[in-house]
Amino acid sequence: MGEKISQSFHSCDGYNNIKNLMKLLSIVLLGLTILTMSSCNNDEVEPIFKTDLSEIISVTENDLTITLYAAEDFFVGYNSITAKIEDASGNLLSGNVSVAPIMNMEMMTHACPLEYPNGQNFTNGSFEFNSVFVMPSGEMGSWTLTFDVDGMAVKMPITVVQPEFSKLKSFVSEMNDASYFVAFIEPSAPEVGQNDIELAIYKKESMMSWPAVENLSLEIEPWMVSMDHGSPNNEAPVHVDNGHYTGKVNFTMTGDWQIRITVMEGRSKHGEPYFDLVF
Ligand SMILES: [Cu+2]
Image 1: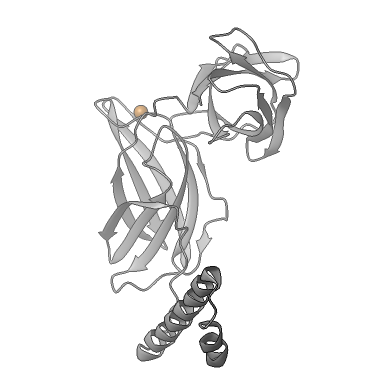
Image 2 (image 1 turned 120 degrees about the vertical axis):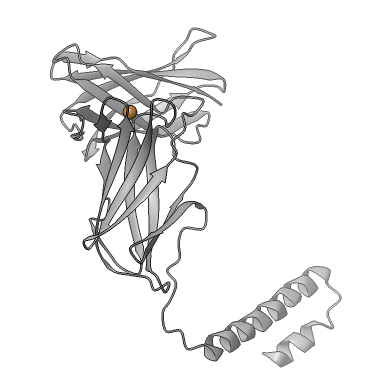
């Protein structure tokens, strides 16, 4: 290997020189890594937490440290959250966990929809959950996430903000007077052309019960408000799993779009929420 490098350093080709410099650098780095690894006898391997996520909050209680990571600050809508769960010495734990998101308001407390995409058992300190916060923090009330890790509780005060363009719409059903909540998950980065659309729909059965609704049929119509036209080649979202509906939405140009949704059950209409987006 060393021979090859010294050989090719004689090359006059700039591109090759850069390539070889990179090669040399990576060998030096590899050497350093091996040195570091052998110089400490930590046999635990840190799990690779998704690097595109930011740390949102970390709380230590009952000898447990829980750190939450997400793509952005918690917002009203569908939040994908990764938790790192450690003991007081920083050892990554395995076990069973439950999460209770609760909003304390002056006259009442309420929960919100919650998903455990990989179940409630976790290993190597890594645990994922999705929480659909239904209101922003503020004068109306405050949110707490309470974790129960194998009988040990960690209570975490969190802040939930209202995004500029709403990613959660609620409506009262014309069919049964119940409140339904529609979370806008995709497209998170809309582009001209056909985009995947993903919505998740929940019913507020009580302050504490927010089940996913799986038996709906949806129609969508993207509408460009300023120019008063729609678009062809959309595909109505259909139920996939756990209250999630996926389809296709087609934008023929950039600008201000409204995604108008008709939520049906059989032949009856529940409601017509819509989402605004500008790109
Ligand atoms: Cu509230």
